[in-house]
Length: 463
Image (cartoon, rainbow, N blue to C red; front, side, top):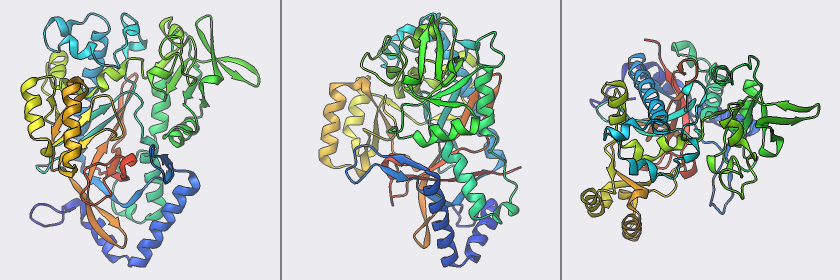
């Protein structure tokens, strides 16, 4: 909201004045109203591993985050570039492997990734699109530059909170929308539906689309139900589907109905007990064979978690240059691959200044945030890193952007990131904005909802 000189940024002037003019009790009443709305709608998430209960209302901050049209233009171009290059990378890895023979990315980095699927070698995916739905996490540094923190390509979550935040904002503070020209996001669900339709197998002009959920105990079940309802498609679990003669069918009260496109919110390991984990009860036996035969499309494709790996992330600038012959528009955060002995030693000696992450985890689980860690935690991570250096990356602690948040009855700064959502079908579509996640705990750098974070509405302003 404020620049380094202490002055209010021009785009925030009307917003700040509106909040200054509002009596504190009225502001609190509106906050309580929005919280009640979230509860009645079931806008919740699940926190695993907490004894005090797992189901919680999703924390929502009333002050929107503003992004100028000029800033968004740069973000949008960078995201389009990145998703295009990652898609080409996945196709190459599972086919010719030219990036290996040209010594750009080492084979062992890819082949040691637990999300690499040998079953995908040589398999032709519809339209050659492996990644139909992506959520990419961005940070804004103190120089104003947006950088990529990580890519989320397996089952990216959070878009329902982006949409419900906007609806809550319109209902709670409608007059603010008259003061700004804000780019709309309400059409995301229809863009998602058209993206899934565009990926249907050949000869299926009116495809049947379903959303595959692990079930009610999944942390993002609210989102699964929300998106299925918004798109007008069936929400199914593994037991609702079956495969016969390499064709997927859905059980209905009127009999079996062929399924053409599955928007899956289930990890690879649990999708097909015949191909992956045999103990899974969440998937559909024979799904991989139906996919291999070209009779059903999966979004996202099996094996896309390879490009989700945080060790692969470190190579994305080289991947962009290799396939697109362009410099990255959005830079990476400086990342140390701990398989390099020299870098590993540097990180171990400076753990108090580093953030260490497992390469295959998400949700903020399993991290070490150096400045907030104890000496015992750092000693534990030293042992973990030395025992399995491939399983970790390290990044320096960044001084990234803070935004004003309503904390109790006053405004305080909190660290924020941004997760825009990219759809890749006939074309690339990005709704303006995304999910701004907030580290609500004072001094925290961790924005994940599972670690005490919340969110706020993101306004991309017309230029």
